[in-house]
Image (cartoon, rainbow, N blue to C red; front, side, top):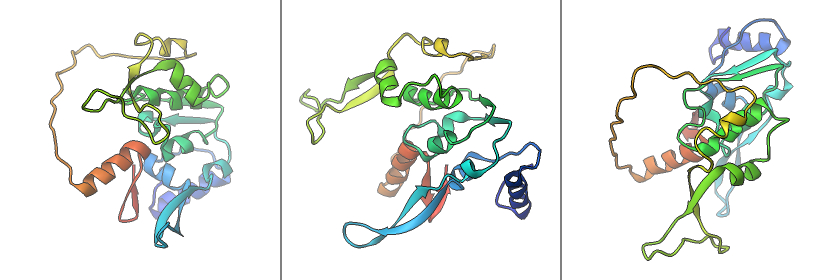
Amino acid sequence: LNIDTTKRGQENLAAYQSGAEGWYFIGHSLLTRRDYEQYQTPNKDGEMVNKSRRIGFWESMPKPDAVVVDEVHLIANYDSKGRETLHSLSADWKIALSGTFYGNKFANAWAPTAWLWPDRAEPYHFWYGKWCDEKPVLKKNGQPMLTPRGRAIKVLIGEKAPEGTFVSTLPCYIRRVGKDPMPDPKVIMVELNAEQRRIYTEMETQQLAYLKSHPWL
C-alpha cells in the first residue's frame, strides 16, 4: 500500500494510522516532510522568514512489526532532518539497505547503525572522534584556519582505522559485491551560480532543500 499525496495514498496513510495490517511504502521525502511543519518567524531585521520544526508525526503511529529503509544513505547525515526522522522510527525488526550506506562521507555511518542498534550506539561526537580521521584546513600561507573561538577548522578525510574495521564490529553487516569490475569514474565539473550554490550547500548539510516552499530530499 503506497503512502503518497494522492487521495488513495492518504487513505492508505489513514489505514496505517488506524493499525490496519499490510505492507506500506513511502518515499524518503514524504517520510521526512510529514514529520515537520512550516512556520514563519521574524529574523533579526524583523522580516518574516520560513522555518521548520519537527512534530514527531511518526512517533504517534502504531508501532510496526518491521521497518525496511532502502537507500538509507539518503537520510544518514547527522545534521539532516531525515536522520532525525529515521531515529524516530521504532519496530521489532529493522533493516537498512544501501549500496553505499554512508554515501561519500564516512561520518554518515553513525546514523544507520545507531538506528539499528540504539542500545549499542555511542554518542555521535564520541563515535566521531574514535572512528573518523580529519585534517586541518590550511590558509594559503600554510597556517590553519580558525573558528571565531580560535579552534582549528578541520575536514573529514575518511575512516581512522583500516577500511572495514568499523563494520566488522557490527552485529550483522552483509556486503555483496558484483563480479564485474567497477568502471572508472567520469568527473564533470560544473560552475554554480549563487542561488545554485545556496541550494547545493543546504542539500549537503541538511539533505533537505526547499524550492518555492516545496521540500526536495
